[in-house]
Image 1: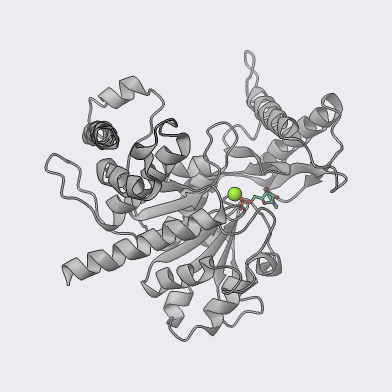
Image 2: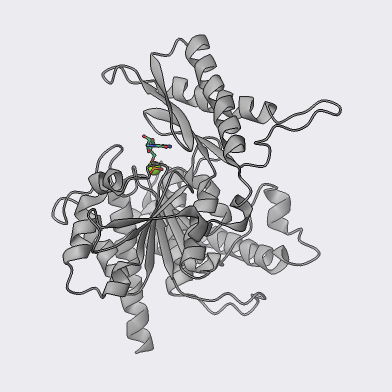
Length: 392
Ligand code: IMP
Ligand code: MG
């Protein structure tokens, strides 16, 4: 039974792999409608093929999916198969005979979300002993892979990031394996896409703040300060309205590039339902602020993208989004293509997740906790070693 289930599942994954290849072949042509597009109208472009059949065999050997008699392949099984398929495509690409676009192989930039991806929600990276992800990040830096931490947490002061990331920053500073150039390949993009800091071994908190004029995307150049404040005003009014209608015991926090709510009394957490309702109401109120009647002028913030997301214990509206955050990292490192960039995050639900936006700028891996991030990086390191072995 297990053998026939294994064969059937593998065939299904092979079929989806072929659908994605067909989709890639069509996505930049004048007839972009692929079969996958008809089956899933909201499907995005793919930057690489996905080695789904091989990934299924790999995950089946770990999770014994086809040997289960009662529990069908689950959401988590599929999520992990997709992650493996993505890293296989980037690190050990198969030669596809029918793939038309030329995709440059290899991993050049790894971007990570912070909370729940690198550390537990609200926690920090203390030391290589307590946080095993640190040594993996150092390994990728030593391979000349660039690393961007693309987090919603938005601060201008290096100290605020140092408080969360000191274990990583100090390990990089004291490393004798990494060259100075490799060390500067760690950057932090805070507030989704608002504040850029670069590793600097001379700086007090190992980080140097980079002025916006040195890195912003062309699309961000015309965001005037009044337009940004107008967006935050609408968001702030929407949060206050949620506090009233949902009887939330919450406080509003207005920042330079964000506005949000958090529990007024830390011992009384906001419930999942309250957080999710607030996300949807704020999103809807900002969108409806953009609709105009007759000859009315659109509001000044009409052209500014924004993110509203449930951070687990709080809800924030941020100016910009992680697609712009990842693109800014790609630009900072001289123009790394989406097919050579992997974003690792935990918030990929299309309704209220801030990592979801990164999907339009690069390849993605969806993890559920920091231990899964470590497992994913170990899988990538093993694949890289095997690939180098076969080339050498
Ligand atoms: P992420 O998971 O790394 O994207 O971080 C998200 C968390 O950062 C949120 O849940 C908040 O607790 C925290 N945070 C701090 N400042 C900000 C901000 O300006 N915008 C959004 N989130 C913030
Ligand atoms: Mg997160």
